[in-house]
Length: 453
Image (cartoon, rainbow, N blue to C red; front, side):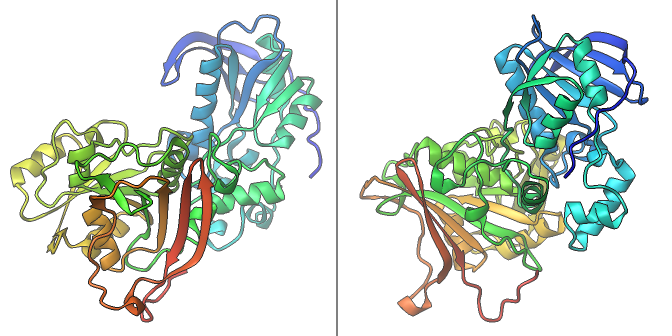
């Protein structure tokens, strides 16, 4: 791809200056009206001083990703991660480049390109089908705004080598490039791979698990081929156990079976899926947050199987960090359902099942609600019920080099009388994560279970 040509732009006019509080702390905000007609926003942290070596992110506008939280791209995660990085350093600039929507093809054309991608084209070919270039962003306005801020050279937060070249051509010195790692989602893995392969972007997820865990995790090898069944989400079952198959000791202690690197993978798997599911027993015992904290990524919908709505009011899954849905049955109290509704907690009522709720029906309800990929984290009854019901597509098991003897088994009785009737695992792979091992495999489908591509 050709290098971007320098833009001949007029000096931007500063039209507003104020202080703004964000989730990453307080920033100075300066707005510049550029000769192109677009208004650029600069969020400035600290004093740029002599203007050299300023940690800088030039963030291309993305309404769908930044404001609406779309998971088709990684823009929203990059925006939040950049602000946190600049805040942590205490000196830096995030320049929000309006007019860069869809790599500067505009919102309407970007949405038209999305439609073509639904038909199988990648992000580059979709643009070309519309008669548009893959990327026509210009960095002249960005460079002019940076100069007005007193920035003379930058340490650039980006995965895009074209952005680095564009700023250099526009007169901004680049002292270094810092890749902006994010954890991928099932919905954008192919898009990110296309940007890496065809637009020469740096791999946004960093190294795969085999090479260790960094700030972001490439979970593509662990997720495998995420093919969504017709009537339910694609289900990944993930749990950590000791070498002798226990997920807790006899006294119920389960923190921490696995090491931090293995737990980061769990968070990356959460970030890769539309929903993360546990049983109410796990919530009562462990009080998990079920959010994404150890890697840069989006927190999925939190789902709790709770047939009688026993969830404590103070449970962390009811905080405002993410949306939560409870799967209950008609045995639950109507008053309790109304109270949860008042707290903006969704309650879905399904038929009772042998272990609480009818799992197949619950998954159908989730699928109808738009959950296409689901991470199931336990506990033991939930793990066993999903396996027994043949409702798992992919298994990821972390194995810690620890033996505890008596304790809670990860998998209970599956009513398997003969080895030949056990669940067969295919497409198997093994990775290391610190001192732990990770085993990932597909669960073979029943002969009469059709696959939807």
